[in-house]
Each structure stands twice: as structure tokens, then as C-alpha cells.
Length: 198
Image (cartoon, rainbow, N blue to C red; front, side, top):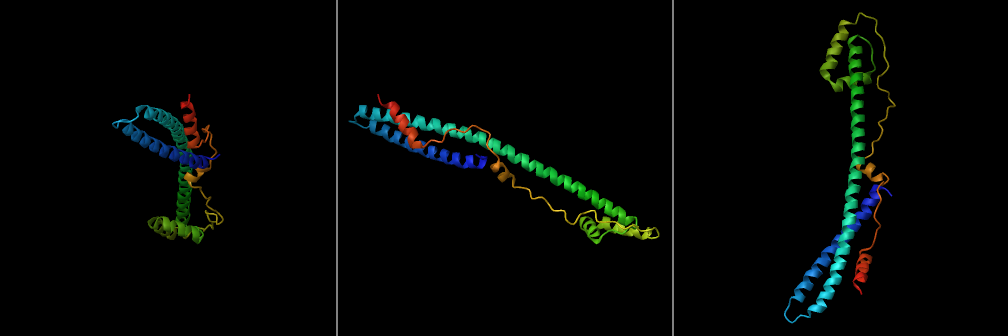
């Protein structure tokens, strides 16, 4: 099961059990009000309150189990997210350093009076117009030298690798945690109700 699938399943479980907790808490309060009313059959309400309390405790326990698991799952998701985001950032910094090195080399070649492809000149011009103009001015001084002709420092077929969205990358990773059993809230309450029977 992937982390994304587990997040979806257990988010639903948490929501379902939380809603049931609220409902049971409301029922407990109403039952207490009935039990405290004048002329109320307190024994009848005590038995109902005991069953309700057991159901509330069982639902709360399962809710806490799912909630704790989800916290661990979110930490795991964050770790994978950060791993991918850091890798992409490192790749971008490395690519920038390589491009900067190529820009400087293109400027050096132009300044020496060498012939470089127009695409390389354009990249230098877009990166830093002042650097480009300085290199062109230096090329006038070095025109008397024998001009070398260079191939492009950037390969035309260089394609940028598509980086996955770090959030999706983390969602698609296999879950390495032991997940609690998915149980329907009605089954948990029925089990608690059976415990209350003598």
C-alpha cells in the first residue's frame, strides 16, 4: 500500500470515528440530563450510561490508534517529500553552476576573438548584457589573432528531466509502517456493547 492510499483510508477512518465520538458524547450528556430529572428511573439510565460509556471508550481508543498512526504516516510522507525537494534543489543548483561555467567560457572565447555559435552568444547576452558587451569589445582587440571556431557548449538535444512533484513522489512511496486494522465504527461499538452484557 502506498502512503497516499493509506492517507486516504485512514483519514476517512479518523473522520468517521471522530464523528461517532461527538455523537456519543452528545448522547451521554442527554442521558445525564434525563437521569438527573425529577422522578427519573435512575437505574434504567445507569445501565444505558454504562453501555454508552463503554462504546465511547472503545471508539475513542480506536480513534486514538488511527490518529497516532496518521501522525507517523505524515512524518514518513514529510521525510520523502523533503528528500525529493532537496534532490531537485541540489540538481537545480548543479545545473545552474554548469550553465554559469558555460557562460563564462563563452565570454572567454568571444573575448579571445573566437567564433562561437549564435545560440551560445544569445545565452551570454540573456544572462548578462554587460559581460557580453565586454567580451565583444575584447574580441575587437583580438581580431588580429587566428580565430578558432567552437561548437556549442549547450547540446541542442539536452532535455530537462521532468521532476516529479515532491508531494506526489511521497504519496507514491510504499508505506513501511505497520498499519492498524481498518474496522467499521459500528463493529467497535457492537463489541463494546457485548462487553457490557453480563
